[in-house]
Length: 331
Length: 306
Image (cartoon, rainbow over all chains, first blue to last red; front, side):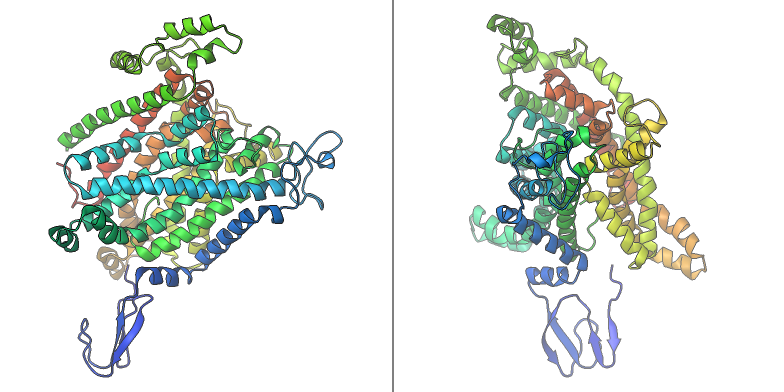
């Protein structure tokens, strides 16, 4: 949506293309595009990463998102130093005399859970599980999706057909049901949960990568590389992949929001990472039967999930707006 | 057009075949023994072996799959291991609940998303726009089970306006449907906003303005109609997802739909029921995608299916 195409200002023609850098200015001359007389500023488009960063850093929402992400990562990494207590310790004074969990108070800032453990410490350690699985699952999804999208988009003939049909089939799978079934039967470790989530979440990435590869591989520089006899792996790595990088960066960020929520859903159903390992969804699952009496046991872990998911969404969305302002839809 | 639909339907049959094969192999290759689950913990080895033979679980995997397909061709989805009921019967008994939840969910998604998106587009970059977009981000980032549980706490426990979960009346439907609507509404609001912004800058809208049409008339009569088209195709996708069973929401509100059936079946490794649910879900998703794709040519006359 070019709202402000060109502004004539005095003798200058200002071309407000975002985040461009002045390379040199002609004191007199004619602007090549508009034909306007007078001094002209010639600008060069900076590389993608620079554009991305300069745009993202100007969006307050994205900055806020990054701040939250950075804080979460720091909290997860330094959990033993940040957490006030051991997350598995059951405090004698963590329950009332009737054996009920405590609400937020001076000793236990976010209250205690049904076993008298400090909720804040459990949430802090839970950040490790959420972030680790979120990132690992999304990396798996990105890898599988990129592989399938590239194979289906670059090659012609049966290779393309096989990978396309597999993707179509995966599209039709009810992802959550499949993941729950796999997780429930495997009784998984952290890495298996991540892999299961990755295995059901790669389809959208495959579709996006496919469309991009299809349009890129029809262009001249790919033909030129082929004609020159550049081996296919090198074409992928040196000629195709750099063009996919911005997309992968965006979806690598947005996708973490999805995978964190997915992990929380699995843990909420009790088929995620096994207790006593603290996880946010697991905390809600454990206290679900008691939440009418102790709603904070649902609210605080819920806020943790919401914040994480929101932060990655904000950053990813700002990145996407930079790369393609016309993109819209569910992403 | 009809040739295109026919081709898509044929493709769908093959996709469904693939879905059954993958699910079958996954379920049987995994280290869970349905015979042992049925027999119970204290069962003797003989009992387990007998049950295994009765169910044909001692046969090679491809024989089992062949038999399954043979029965499927006759519309027979098999019998539940846990309850001695036909899987088809079980699914039928759950479809109504899932159908109502789907309708309610899409209703609230539209009710929340469309006006919010329109307001944001009209008041672009203003305060309304900003609040709507923040709300939309919160909506899409909030986990459904948290929203559901908190809605239950506030509107069914603190102020008991609605029942605490269950199924039966319109009052039971409201909270689970709103839970679906909050997450989905965020997506619709963002989509509606960008669709409106696309349309509002087009020439025919400017013409309408130049002819002196009021702002309301421009938005409602001219812009809205075209902006709604992408929304229609998104409803198609949502139809598929929701009819396929919304496990989380159904589990929070004890809603007796397809999703809860799946969840119960998974916990006891009731493989025929899991297979049945996956098949029905896949069919719903394929159907929803087909509807969504059929709307695209209306969206963009350049796309035509032959």
